[in-house]
Image 1 (tube, rainbow, N blue to C red):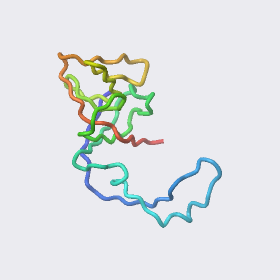
Image 2: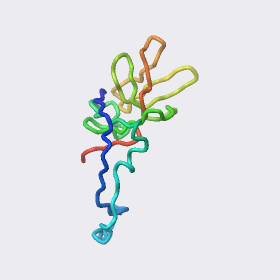
Image 3: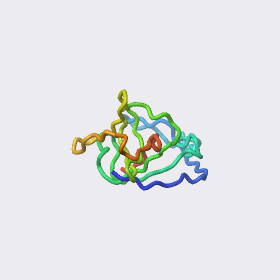
Image 4: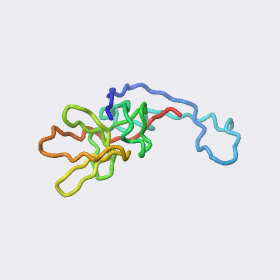
Length: 138
């Protein structure tokens, strides 16, 4: 799975916001349209460390990340076990769940078609950033 990376664009976008949306009986949502939401403050916590990447491939479909989705990636967050990370390995960006064992890092796909990747000393490897949000078309 490859990623096309884009820098975060520092614009302010404020849109009408209706608040919580119940997945049951409908409610009169027009009564709540006086509120607004700033998407920058909602999904971008550190503008200088935030990047976007477009997903190419299907290795993370089990985590709800599909081909064409837009990832919000934050550099500088601690790469903890189980987090979904954008990694640079042997000249390519990839998105995988990281599994950290004693002395080994594994890059684990969320699609059974793909085997986990064991990171070794021979790899050119960097955990580039942590995925914090996924923006998708429905």
